[in-house]
Image (cartoon, rainbow, N blue to C red; front, top):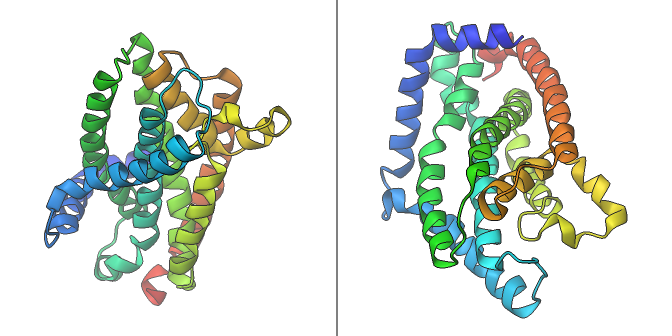
Length: 261
């Protein structure tokens, strides 16, 4: 399966790059602040949660200041949630391509996710400034960010493929996905550290694949430590299972896309 996906991406790499560039350009074309929204969105979110949970409720975060913890959480979570949201609409919003051109439709999923990378890079630049302000020095373990982000992109592709294939036949999915992502946000250690969850419930939290990914990213960036082996293993296993399930479902439903979309 991996070879098949990689082969399709390579064969249609020029179409993939064209779609990525189109998505990035169109997303900010009519926006007043343009590309700045890639920075403003996580910054506003982090500021609100920092005021509420960092200053008022004072969630314990150990040795990590709350602002870099919540800002880093939103950067990596927003990349995932926005990728899933874009991927969900990628088939229905490209009906002209789906009905007129023969190509593997998962290219649309991948392009919508890759199109979010410039936003992530811009937000990471702000995170670097915050780390400098709080005198948080990175270690060699920051290199873990690369494989962890790749795992996150794979997970986003799997979830996006699942919802995109269903959205072609059931347009209610468009309204359901934001609600599910909001619930998923609060079930994931984004605005709080995993250690703040009672010990007896932490195993259940780790069954959420985004927990191991986000905690691993935080360890690499803020703590200067490698990801927790058990959490990462769970995330990789669950991600792998969901990739297989979503891809098989997507390819099965893909046969009717041009007739329904």
